[in-house]
Length: 100
Length: 430
Image (cartoon, rainbow over all chains, first blue to last red; front, side, top):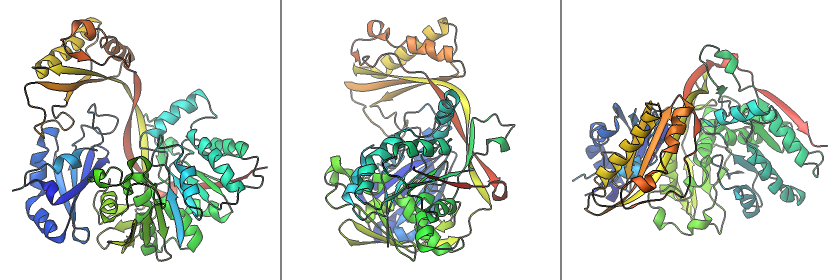
């Protein structure tokens, strides 16, 4: 199963860091996200981008997790030479994670 | 209940959106317009250096012109925009001169955000604090129909009208938190009405996505909606996606007006394209202002070429190596150079297995950065020759030589609130 079957997402930049909001479609999905999508797992998933630390915040009231990915944007904003220098596509990429 | 719309999420957003939103919503109270991204100030600094009367978002003047007929017909909408950039006074003067058909109209101008002189040792191009909502409310209290600010926190463009209308105090944390959430939700325009959404394909009428309206109640809670007859959608999904956009710790969302916790938020669909958001928890803001600073950081160019065929990774690597070598022979070892094979997963390099078949089609993207403009120029000259010296299956040169752009870095600094004095001035159209 892919993550996109139980959740949707949005990502963006904060300087050299990016955040990904990951939101479950229902309460049961949120319980699965809590178990499956750990900060460590997200860090591994994006390791090729040079991410140095991932912090996971829980928002049970919204069935949502917020991941802050440090130094994932190679300096970020105008300094990064990457096409996606603002982390706009990271959410879409995370939803392709195989979770079962 | 106060109806506050947003019809400009960034400098370059749809220029007709403001007048469209006003025509679609005859009882709109306030229209907020956001022009300033993190490095916009550095672009404005270049413009102001060439001409002291520049340094603001000139597109805003067209927006003001487009609203004149509505004001002449008696529409009450008041405008709050950070279009002033580095030169709010010049922006307001320019507005005043195009509003001569509406004598007596008042324009509020807010400055005092420019704090470049506080950081003499950092070789900065610009440094501006993110001001809060109170100066906006003061300008509105004095009758301003248009309020022009320089750097102001995006949600404060929405909180300001609420402070003015409901006469909240600066320590009414729960209400300020609620209005800040409303501002955060509409500040990116159509990102809350179906744009940029995971399930974008499922929403209706993509060419006509409506800009958002926050109906803010006296208790600070809000209903997010959009004008009837427009495309896109407002539902719990689009609202939750935008709530989580560009945030850090959701228990401490910082603005100059209030610190907000999202952890009590309740998001509820109460009708078609109507989502109520309540339960924001507020506490005092930081004792410092956030400063948005930019500094000059050399030059950059990028080039795109399309390749079809087999062995494209090898071909792209050789093409790139050819360009780097030619630039070397012109006398420059480029400080930063970057190759991407778009269509092979390089938008998120190394994360997803994409485009692994034998026959492929990719866009090869070469990007370089260097402190020497001449080095970047040498790169720009070596793209077109690939048409005759590159592999078979290469195309897409028609856009000409890559543009060489000066680059500005962004630095986040802080400054004690006591060192900053926001100023409010009112100009009257004669």
